[in-house]
Image 1 (spheres, rainbow, N blue to C red):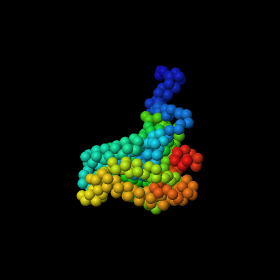
Image 2: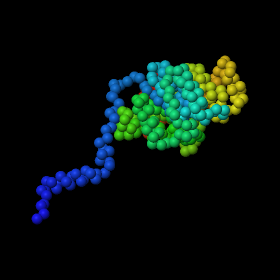
Image 3: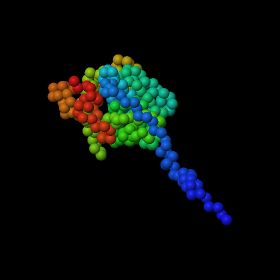
Image 4: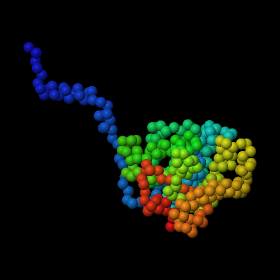
Length: 316
C-alpha cells in the first residue's frame, strides 16, 4: 500500500518549490541600498556643481559666479561631460583631449574651483542609463546644493544631451535603490539652466540675474587659460585665428578677450535688465555692466525668494 506523506511534509515541500520558482524581483528586493548621506546641521558652506558639454562650457557660462562663490568660501566643481577631442580645427584625439584637460585645470586653479573631465568622446554624448548614473553619482558625491547645466534645447547635440541627463538625475539623486553604491541625498538640490538664445519650444527665462562686474577681470584671466578655444577658435577656427586674436602677445590677447567677453556679458545684462533691477534695486540694477543669469528647472527643489538669496549670496 502506498504511504501518504505527513501533511507537514507536504507543506514544507510546497514552500521549497515556491521559493525555487520565485520571480527574480523577490531576490532583488534584498539588494541593500546605500545609506543616505549623513545628516548635517544647517550649513553655511554651499556646494555647487555645474555640468557642461565640453572643457570650456562651464567656465564660459558660470565662471563669474563660480569666482564669487569661492571668494566667499563656498565649494564649486565644474564638470565637462566630454573630453573635447574634436573641438579644434587643426588637431584631435588624445593629444587635444589632454591639452583641453590641462587648460581647464589651469582655469580652475585661477578661479579656485575644482574640475573634472569625463572620458567620453566629443560629439558622442548620449542620454544613456550609464551616463545618467554617472551624473547622479557625481551630484551625490559632491553633496550638491545647486546643480547647473545647459537647457535641452541647444544647438549642439552634446549640449542638449547634458541637459537631458542632468534633468533625468533630478529626483533620482534621492532614490536609495538607484545607484545604491553611492549614498543618496536627503534633499533634492536646486537645478538651474545656463542661458541661450533659442526660442523654441520656449525662450530662456531667468529666475536669477547676477552682476559679475566685481569679478569680470578675474573671469577673463581664467578664460585666458583656454587657449585652444578663445585664441585658436576651437572647431571653427582657422590657421589665421590665433594671429587675428593676438594669441602670442600676452598683453594684446587679454585686451582682445576682455573686449569680446565684455560684449557678451554686456548683452546679457541688457537683455535681463528687468531681472537685475528686481534683484538689486533700481539704481544698482541699472548700473550693472556684466551679468550671468540662470533659469530654475522645475524638476529640482523650488526655492523661495529668501532661499534663492541664500543660494546666491551676492545681493547684499
